[in-house]
Amino acid sequence: MKTNIQFIPFAMLLNREIQRFMKVLAQTILTPMMTSTLYLLIFGVSLGASIQMSSGISFLEFLIPGLIMMGCLNNSFQNSSSSIVSAKFGGDLEDYRVSPLSNSQIVWALSLGGLARGLIVGGITFLVGEVFFYSTTGAWLNVHSWPIFVFFLAIGGLSFAKFGMSVAFWAKTFDQMSIVGNFLLLPLIYLGGVFFSLEKLSPFWQSVSKFNPLLYLINGVRYGVLGQADVSLSSCILVSGVALVFFHFLALRSLNRGSFVRW
Amino acid sequence: MSKPLSVQELIKDYGPNRAVDKVSFEVEPGEIFGLLGPNGAGKTSIISIITTLERPTGGAVSVFGHDVVKDSRQAKVNLGVVPQEIINHGYFTVEEILKFHSGYFGIWENQKQIDFLLERLDLHVHRNKRVKQLSGGMKRRLLIAKALVHKPKLLLLDEPTAGVDIELRESLWGFVEELKAQGISVVLTTHYLEEAEQLCDRVGIIHKGQIRKVGPTSSLIKEFTQRRIQLTLKDQIAPVSHRWLVDQSANQLVFQVPADQGLGDLMSTVDFSYENVMDAQIMEGTLEDAFRRVLGEPTA
Image (cartoon, rainbow over all chains, first blue to last red; front, top):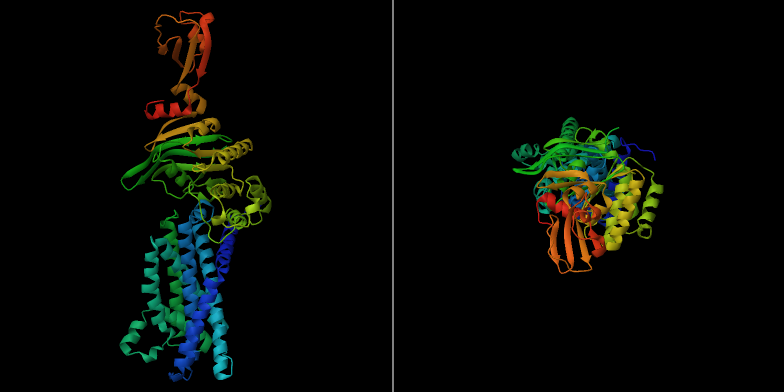
């Protein structure tokens, strides 16, 4: 029996995380796909036809990258947080602690698992968006820069998966979990420029919005897809990098201080 | 060679309450050690510290020489744990759970051991079932399979037979004996003192967070219990006066004899002959009697 506690515990936990959301595809993949489709249909195709963007692109083009990032962030957060909460509830979180899994391995395995789900949902949203774009314009939406597009998706998904872990370790009840999701995360995502451009806001609200870190993550993806964004690419890279480092250490701290004992 | 388990001056406080108070004991290779105590004595706190679920307030715990705080990952490589409460694993099947658990211990390919455990613990026909589809006994056996999937050298069993029927309990103890024969050390907490007496080479009795007594099971019984000898005589005799006599009725005499004294020692000190004894019943002291005595409770 060959034993390697440096890599295998991490790889097996990542494998478990991916299998976990693949077992409930209707919940984890198909539902977000349906949501994205409805958003694109209602806001992108129907209402979007009457919205004029000053940057020379259609509202549907503007909306697609925002929805991709929204799906990725939401699902990365949901995956890691629900994994921990259900493991706390079922008692199998204790398995992580009584085995040689290190906190760092747990953080990376769960955040990569969350990212995997986020990327799948983001990818499906992209495909659905392409179909809507083609059916509306007769042409495919060309991605301006795949590396920048994937870079921001990966940084955003990882950061939010780590944030989800931190919240799940902190929460003592399901109520506390939903408070963070509904009263912090959701407003930040919706006000982070998924559905509107900064140029549509008054100077005061433009300044306020620039304190929302999600604005930079969403605009990073938008730059990757469209080659233009409301904020500069360098500020997007800077804020995303800081967010990743911050959420990584927050997740590690949550594991170091949090309890693995079942609810 | 390092001891499988060494607990030294262990302290655990929960706020102002001290749950474990300077507890020390060691477990030898290949022995079954029973940690016995009433509810709330501190047994589960000690197990939780050994498994790193809880952090100690003071003292030191090491598994095969690896400190569970400073070198916890190496300490856990050789440690298997059967928790008190059933664990639910959501959407995963029995076999998947065992594969994941092998991986957490650094073993990617472990099918042979998984098949062996599924077979040995009568779970092979349930390998594709989810935990919620298993009976209580099967769930308990799955916990044991998980604890053994990485072939640990030290096994912690925290009340493994709580709520388990007699048949399963006996088969589990048979399995524990097999593990002992393979050289695996076992730490056991249980409320069933009769079983602890049969299984454990040594026991530690803990009460209100403090170890009251540690020693070989037979020695503790000898030290803290008395042998009860009941003699039935052929003829009724006059009232007997003897320092070990506890009851006399008609032709029956009941003596409580120190554990290191036998029937011969008793007969050499009474003033009636062997010929007058029709029957002699000798009842040995039990671990439960010793346990009660150590805790200062009245014995049966």
